[in-house]
Amino acid sequence: MNDFIFKDNELYCEDVPVKNIASEAGTPFYLYSLATLRRHFKVFDESSKVLNSLVCYSVKANSNIAVLNFLFKMGWGADIVSGGELFRAIKAGVDVNKVVYSGVGKTEGEIEFAIKSNILMFNVESIPEVFLIDKVAGRLGKKAKISFRINPNVDPKTHPYISTGLKKNKFGINIKHAIPAYETAAGLSSIDIAGLDCHIGSQLTEISPFNDAVAIVKELLDKIMSKGFNIRYLDLGGGLGITYENEMPPHPSTYMNSIKNILKDYGGTVIFEPGRLIAGNAGIFITKIIYNKDTGSKNFIIVDGGMNDLIRPALYEAYHEIVPVIKRVGPRIKADIVGPICESADFLGKDRVLSPVSEGDLLAVFSAGAYGFSMSSNYNSRPRSAEVLVDKDKFHIIRQRETYEDLIGKETVPDHNI
Ligand code: LLP
Image (cartoon, rainbow, N blue to C red; front, side, top):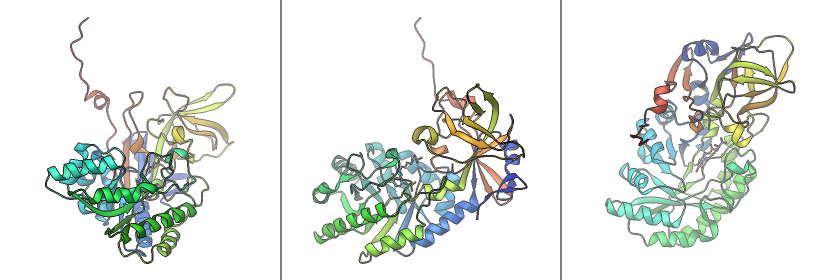
């Protein structure tokens, strides 16, 4: 089943022709399918039910409040990494008792906001952090629930920029320091030790690193519990990969069943933080061809969406399939598809073979629903694109395109002494 489909050589999102959306919303824009989001939700939700689990969607993957609102209404919580994400989650109607807060650099202000909001738990990534949480909770007359994020030193076999569970990474607490960390936290009066957490990386396409990490964490969990700590939550993070090109990531139910075996005698709640798996293939990015440029040594298709809109190709050399929204017949062309930004890294795809296209045609960049808009920027003073959500035969602009006024709205010019 796919909700981005070609009918008579023209791309539709569910029942809506993509070109109709482009005429109303302008280009470039992100386009999400509610039917796909719903299906991804269902697959993960049902698979996770083999365990006593809580799913906290990883807000960073796609943080549009319409997307969040849908997932929260369906009953999921949120994995957040900043005060801004907490604000979004609350605005989108999250049940605060289902919010976990990860990240190595939580500030005092952010910690205070989270405690006052009564979130479920902090996933603590260092000893100084637990002291700060204790201090803030004490000042507010509250107890803060925490888990420690443990770095199990497992290679997730993914791009180095999105590996997080190796000892050279900044994330989590070295597993060798885990028990002393729990003992230290036990001495803090405003801390309630509630969980154990781990997240080894993103876009994992093999099951074995997950199994290795869960086995290591389970061994540690047993040790910690044997010391009398009441670990009611085991958070296993996110990380399940998706198909961008021809990857064959494990199905969520394969993943759940394999870790279920390892965790069979654990009576607490297992938390999952999926992001990419839910949003990645529920979204595409639509951009318009401005020029076809032949430099004599190479063809460049120059489009109106660039690395400021979708940075994944530039940052990770990530592959995203790119196809014309209207497929024409005729000789195929080979070109680099590049944006308007003044950087040679500003490409969406290299050496791509496409059916014939002309200036003014639309291109669809697939698998862009996760870490697409949420990583976009205003570089080169380009207003960020619109976001559109399709539901059957209707579409909703869920974020307006930014304007030039938005670009400078927060800026002021002091009196210059010249
Ligand atoms: N939990 C934690 C603590 C995380 O750090 C992340 C992702 C997730 C959950 C969600 O992981 P997912 O299920 O989406 O793999 N910008 C990169 C991905 C960075 C992922 C960061 N952490 C990309 O575009 O590939």
